[in-house]
Image 1 (cartoon, one colour):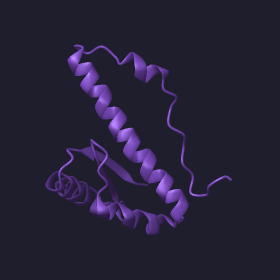
Image 2 (cartoon, rainbow, N blue to C red):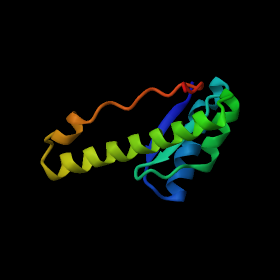
Image 3 (cartoon, rainbow, N blue to C red):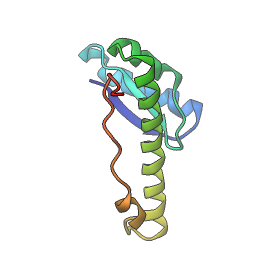
Image 4 (cartoon, one colour):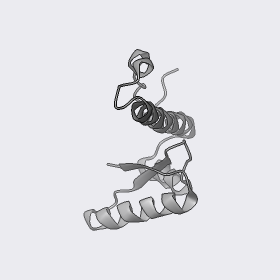
Length: 107
């Protein structure tokens, strides 16, 4: 299991988010936090998850891309809702959902 957090896109914010999640779940065993910035920044310690889960390089690159894209899309939807007084983004409904990433790529 991995705990995901999306936070403000600043190194200090990302480090704080990682530490909060780590402290919160450290008593439950090895539950690594996955920290992604709201504008798609990637926290360097996220790459530790790859070795913990045994994910190959190609699958990890695809996962990183999709995780960053999901964070950006979520941020854009929140901005749209804020600017349009809570209205859902009509373009977001037309976008297909992000595919599920498995540790074994299908060629």
